Image (cartoon, rainbow, N blue to C red; front, side, top):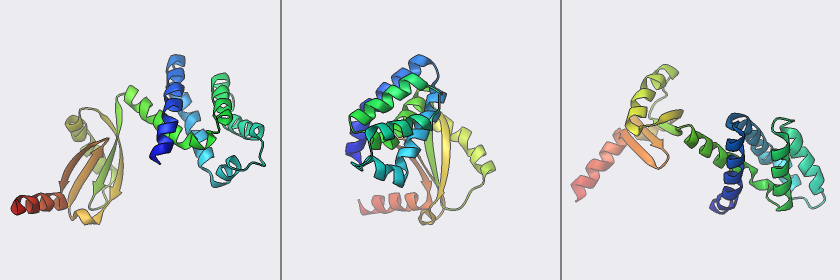
Length: 178
């Protein structure tokens, strides 16, 4: 996994630079996401690795995924990926592109891990507090992990805020053992 992300990074950076220069990050994001989803489809993934499928057929398939949204540059990009046998990297490229876009917009992904299900109103009340703690705008996703016992854990990039009962118990156990 890490190797494919390493290989995908220069492509994603180049694509992001072109999209930024065009001034239309959102439209490019939509198209790159569609390309990534298409490349992630098991049938398409099998076709990418199949030597009996012509490269031109694959390029045409991917070009048709976005229509005429950002036609020339994206078409050239898909052609380049095909030429370098990198079409299978489109899901990683799409993920990296999205992270660059969010960084440009001052937005970060936050994963809220809760011991119990929380509803949208609770998340909406929590987000401003978390944005103050992490000093950035946040786009959140919520997962439930009953092993936390109570409370929440929030992960933003490489930062973590652990306000869970499990985290407090682990910290207490560490303190008692030392």
